[in-house]
Amino acid sequence: MPDNVYESDKLVSEYLLFHYGSAEEILPPTAPSDMREALDFAIRTQRHFSFPVDRSLDLGCAVGRSTYEMSRGSRSTIGIDFSHAFVNTAELLRHGPVPYTRLDEAHLSTSLEARLPDGIDPSGVRFEQGDAMNLRADLGQFDRVHAANLLCRLPEPERLLKRLPELVAPGGELIIATPCTWLGEFTPPENWPEGATIDWLKHHLDSSFELSFTIDEPFLIRETARKFQWTSSQLSKWKRR
Image 1: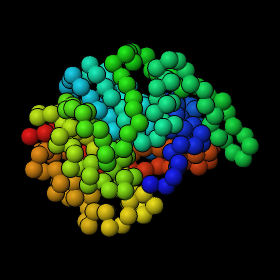
Image 2: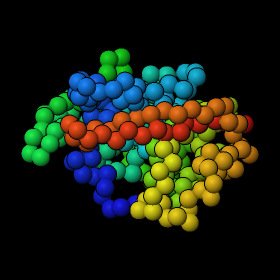
Image 3: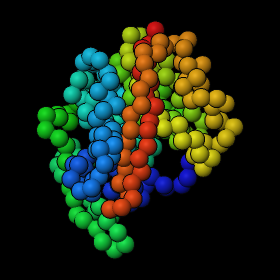
C-alpha cells in the first residue's frame, strides 16, 4: 500500500465529508439524481444486516460512520482501520463535533463540522488501528462482520479471506463491498482475481459461507466543488454455515 496515502489531512477531510456530510454540503445545486442516490454509502451498506446482535466488527472502518451505525443493533462494536489518522478521528467523534475543511477550489475552502447523528450511543463502540491481513489473534468471533471498499486495497487480500471463517460466528452474517478497482499500487497483479471478483470470492468463501445475494451500491466522494468520484461497489452478503 502506498505510504501514508490515508494519513493526510486532505484524505481525513474528504472522508469526514463522505461519511458525515449532508447533501447540501456535498452536492452542487445542479447535481443529477444519480449523485444523490450515491450518498450515505456508509449507512446503506450496513443496513443489509438483518437482526440485532451481540458483537459486530467493521473492517476498514475509515472515519467510523459505518461502525457507529452498526452499533444501533449491536451490544459491542469494534472498528478497525490501517490508518492511524482515520482511527484517531473516528474516536474523537465520540466526544463531540470534529472540525474539518472542505476544499472548494485552489485556495478556497469551507470550514465544516462532523458530528455523530442522533440516536447513537458511542459507549458500546471502540476503535483500533490494525492490519486486515494480520488481525490480532484474540479478536474472537462476531455475529456481524462488515468490510466495505477494503478488499481491493490490500496487498494480499486472500489473507483476510482465509481469516473470515474464524471471525464470523456460526449463523452470523458477513458483508463485503468492493468496487473491484484492482490497482497495482495497492495490490500486486499476481494477487488479483484471475476472473470476476465475485467468482473469486465464491471460490474462497463457499466452504464456510452461503451467499445470500449480491447488489450494487454506488458511492460518491467529493474532491472539489466540481470534481467527484462516482463509483459502484459490488456488495455481497454471506451467512456463516
